[in-house]
Image (cartoon, rainbow, N blue to C red; front, top):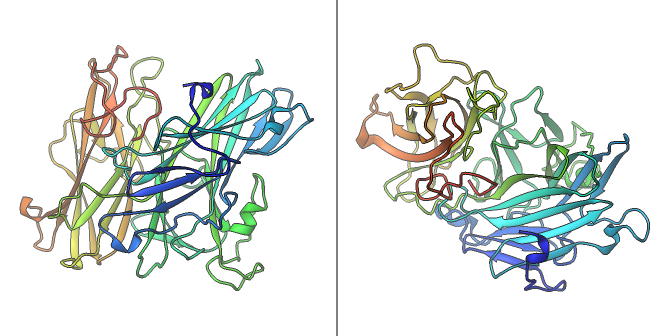
Length: 462
């Protein structure tokens, strides 16, 4: 919908808000800056109710978006969303336009510089989606210059959990154990598998509040920077980490404990319009059955696209032979009946046109499409409150007819040494749309990753 079609229901003096009872986001009517906090948050974690997830001191300028534009004539410019550039006639001088069509509807902020318009669309993941409890941040670039430009984007988020202005980041680099990040560093995609999700904790030993950053498999960041907020915020785009600087204590040059991270995206060549999408917030887990003791959250692409030869799919992963990946988060959540679990098995089943691959994205010997037996991954000594992150890789097999292929991820208590239905302690089912070799898709539209709702085109909440 064009920006002009929106009826403004807010004012510049009051923030625009979206609130679903689990998560709340406020967007400044003046500059488009935003802050996020929980209400109910994660239903399985009462300790995260009504907590800040981004820093807020009354202003809306510590988390912000910037862009790098490479023009056709070789000129490269960095812009902060909402900044003022060029002469007095440049449209950037008009500031940011923020609009919301209806109460609790998406909040659209637009800003122009030269012949380019940048659009920030803030909304909430819908109730049926796995990302329910999170805020969707979508960025789009409209190019009205008549000449293509190359665009990169940086989203800087000023981490805060409750009243604690610093966090401990947990990122799975290799294998099964997450690394705790407390010092400035950059994770780069060319020498590191950028995770589909990672999380922040207020306490690495006994987390009461956690926040997740979930990347859309269709447009992953090419790098992620972690640092002291002062270090990151003092840069418009490029960031050089001070690798010895610990942002979780006051023994640094800024004499404050203050953390932030930045997601870097290569939007690519923009002739007319391109966009990207990411999520930040909590998993509401409002549909986890009470009999489950382990919560399972999964992020997958909504659909794959046929390649030009129509004999395979456009790959969303550069690992091995994988066509796409799935980000999985398991949590042995705290409750009155929670206990440490000696051994668990993560069991992965797929329907006929998908097959699970190894950690290197390569074929597992003896496993083919239409495999009946699940792929099992074992973990030991899973304590109460422990969170496990895992990236799974899948290959897709094109067929003549389009289909919604299913991935079932189950968790079993293996204390007795075997997988049994009465020992299932958690499960999540997700779907991926595979177009047929004729490019067709099913006639029924859905809106999330269950048969209830899956969109067959466009950018929608997973």
